[in-house]
Image (tube, rainbow, N blue to C red):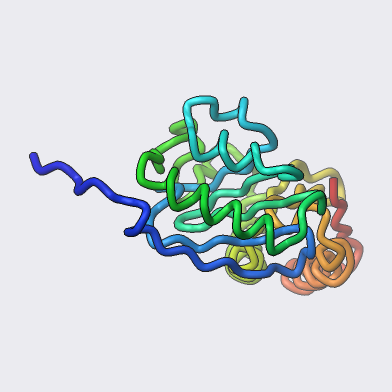
Length: 195
């Protein structure tokens, strides 16, 4: 069995990227940050064994981290200027990624394709439409969404990562999701309810 080479901070390449949410910055790293699935964390206590998570939450104003593949989206409250936050986050990423375990999370939440065997046929159809039309764009911007429940003609969703609290997610993106689902499901009465 061969061991993985030990990375140094100089091996870590990081590209910060603005998102549509002015209070969220996406960092693209040349190493895996989340091997499978995605994770949204609101405090370091949700992943206490991670020095990367602990150190990112120590940056003043950091409110949420959203991990997906080789990216982490940092949502903040504006306590620091964006340039200062980027500088501090890049410093943390350079020093903590070499010791970060990208295989974190609960096994059932780590599937690259979520297990949808226990959801209704209606939700499976909606999830497939979202996977095909909406999620790639949200994920490219450092976010995502999750269906919380379907009740009658209402689809309740939770925005994740950069999409949470983003002005465009609550306006244009919400209208786009609703329009696409209404069209594809041929149900003009369908309503998207953000939680």
